[in-house]
Length: 102
Image (cartoon, rainbow, N blue to C red):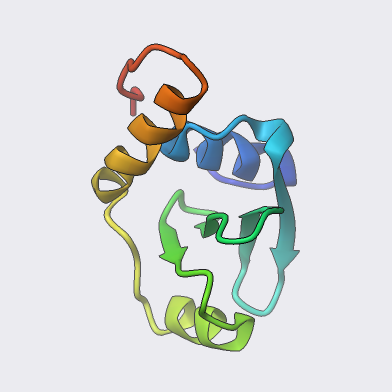
């Protein structure tokens, strides 16, 4: 699978984080060839989703130039490290915890 649209980036981010797609927004960052998916709330998640399905989780304190540079330098987040985030977001919404299929 290749990520080639905002919709596919949103779907990946939603699956990994447990946050519904309608609470996320995606923007293409052409300078690094990835979609920036963020949650429009203070302290919300920010993920860069590469066209190859790789992801970089970024802290809310990081500025976009730093995030972009780290992604371009090859830094990625192991998707399994987002499991606690996904589980928490499902729990606060009263949803069941079914692990994502890859």
